[in-house]
Amino acid sequence: MGLLMMLVVSRPVMALGPQVEELFTAGDNVVKTGLIEGSVFNAGRNLKIDAIVKGIMFAAGENLLIEGESEYLFVAGRMLNVTQKIEKDLFAAGQSLIFDQEEVGRDAYLAGENVNFDGKINRNLFIGAKNASISGVVKGDVTLGVEKATIAEGTVIEGTLKYNDNARLNMADGVEIVGGENTYKAPEMEKREVTEREKVVGKIGGYLLKVVTALTFALMLWWLFPQIFKSLEKQNLPLTSSSFGKKVATGLLVLLLTPLLALFMLITVVGIPVSLLLITVYGFAMFAAQIFVGYLLGAVLRQNKNKKWLNLVAGIMLLVFLKMLPMVGGFISMLSLLWGLGIQYRLLLPKKA
Image (cartoon, rainbow, N blue to C red):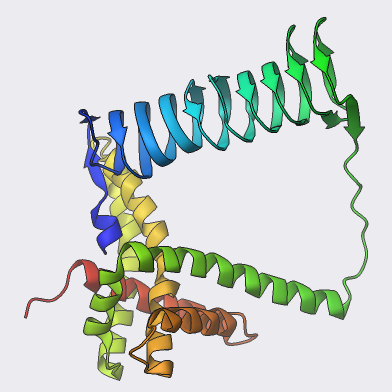
């Protein structure tokens, strides 16, 4: 699959120069600098990024040092140290988070055991943590869900400070909170029987959520990699029982052997980065299986050469519905997963003519 083939594995990885081409990078020690025209994904045990990203930056690892600039930042890891300027929104999760921000253009959402934020946020700050420390300027509201929070001297909150009523709040002298303080208490869960109407509404809501999630990702693939779907039709249509059976059998082998291969590389130590990447690709492939199966179902049902993206929409809606049916839904889910894995294997490794 074209998207997966863009992944680059190296140990270490170094990208220098005025424009960085490797948009997908994974390794043990990853260093990335330069100008990146587009969104990027970086993963590594030790990850250092000092780049200007004209798009979304995704970063994950054990120890991360994030500098430079991006439009959006999504980051997760054990130890995070972020000094990057973010034009729009910041999303971060980890064990220990340290933010010394030049500026966050809009909102910041932070979750971790220990969170320390020092900088300027032009809208709202949300923190969920065991221990939180805040200093700097927040133009909007600050919402905390914490055990303990410290607000340093000179901090300015132009909106409202909201925090859970059982939090231990230490506020230094000289803190300015323009909108005042509010506390909240999480409501206690009330035990009661779920009505039939609520069950129906829940099932409909669950169906719509699954459809929207799958379609969002599917249409993104359609837009970015249209050639994938052309190859998909060429390899699988017209649909025959023989081709279907072979793809399901191949998918079963992929489902069983991939985790074993990843485990083998993991215990060799040297193959740890490759193993982690393989596990990531494996999870992606399992999710993407319904997208490719859905497209083929839509193509068979509609048999329309115009607006083929509607085949994708119709097929995914039908497949998600079938997977939610009682009694047979589990069987359909497993069958579609195996078929989808087999389809992707042949997209990556087509048979020679």
